Amino acid sequence: MIRKAIYPVFALILFVFTIPLPALAMDMGVQSTVRLSPISIEQSLIGLRFDQSPFVITPKAGFGIEDRDNQYTHTVFTFGCGIDYYLSDQDALKPYVGGDILIDYVDRDNSDTSLSLIPHIGAEYFLNENFSLGADVGLHMGFGDYYESEFRLGTATSIHGTYYFNTSE
Image (tube, rainbow, N blue to C red; front, side, top):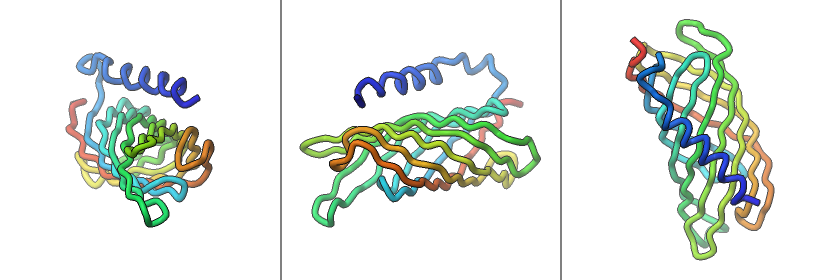
C-alpha cells in the first residue's frame, strides 16, 4: 500500500524542481522547521520555499531521532513537500491553510516506511522583508508500517523560520 502512495509524492517533488523558476515572478527562501507530534517523532526539517503568492510550495527533508520503549534508538529520515495558501496579503502577518505530504523512513534492521498527510492552519509573521517566523497546527494522519501500526491519527504542531532571498524584485 505504501509503495503505491510514494509515486505521487515523487511526481510532485519532481514537478516542483522542474518548474522554469526564472520565468515565474516568485520569491524564494530557505525554511527551517521543527515539527512536534504525539504519534510520530520530533522532526527537524529544512526546505526550499517558493512563494508564488497566494500559493507557497516547500519541498523539504530532514531527520529525527526516536527512542522506542527506552531501549532502541533509531534515526528517522523524512522527505516530502508542503503546500500553503495565504488567506490574506497583509503587510506583516499572513495567515494560511495548507498541508504537508511526508514520507518517513526508519533506519533499522527491519525498516519501516510511512506516509504522513498533515492538513494544517497557521500564520507567518514577517519581522522584515527577508525574515519571517511562523507556526501551524494540524491533523497528522500516518499510513504504512510504523512501529507496529498501519494507521495513526493525532495532532501536529510546527514552528518555522524562513529567510527569503527577495528574488521577485
